Image (cartoon, rainbow over all chains, first blue to last red; front, side, top):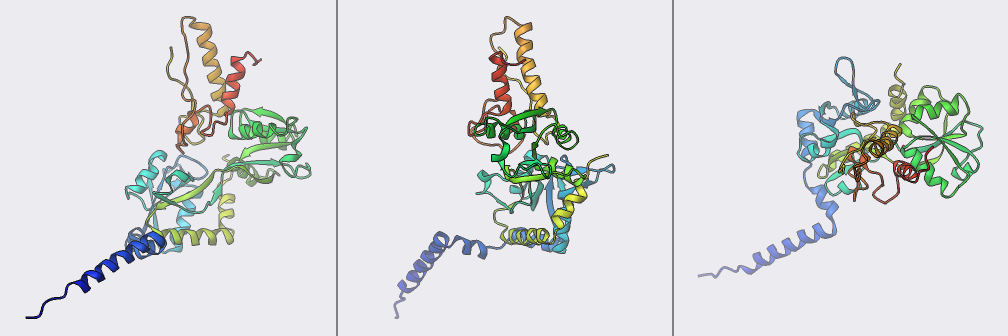
Length: 271
Length: 86
């Protein structure tokens, strides 16, 4: 009777297990790609991209008179879905519950003027920023303010108590002769600069600034963002195909000027 | 002792106030308590600081950022406490 030799199979199994362990350890990206993206495949099968959104933040998302979601983020989601041959289904969710809904699988993505949270990156995948909403220094053309070092003996308008105010106080620590002029609202600060030249520059969030620019205010930004708060799209950490598709589409929308066109369409001040 | 109170100035929370209002209301609250309730030992408002950003409207209750940078409201209340406000 022939005796069965068991050790080759056992050795093969051990080698196989070691190879898988090595892949997980040294090539996690490869292992991730080998796993199926069930989010993307379900989207393709159903023809629908479920996007979580809290429609309470114009001009990014709000409800029109008929109760229909409208805004920059709505238009962005619709354009991206159309590029993939999908319909977008906007799922209304309160802002603080958006990421929970994503992790629970109630939505495929979140687009809702969502700030990037580095603490969530083990559980959530974020796109590259599609809008920087942070604080910028802005002035009028010809004011000869080319960077923050040129603010000595200048007066800068801020909304009292705002992040712009905080950035201004931070700048005063290195430029003590910088004067801050507080206003009750950011638009009052903008008016003080544009209409009255009561101040030399303003520190204001980029949403307010872009709305003013789209509506004709001759404001120019000075330098890079001073306090960053980028808006991003959130996706499941396992949805690598969706992540790649979102990344590719955002680049295309940026390079073709669509994102800028959306700002000009939706950042028009309310009458 | 009032153990908790305060205002929120988150830019997208429907129950928030403007940052300037938050400062004005907060200082007025301290001043009112001092003037009207002399028996009150302390007014504690929410919140000094969180250990990390909540990335939600909760962050806009704090007086100091997670990296201990004081927000303008903290500085204004400090000025009020020192009798430096007009």
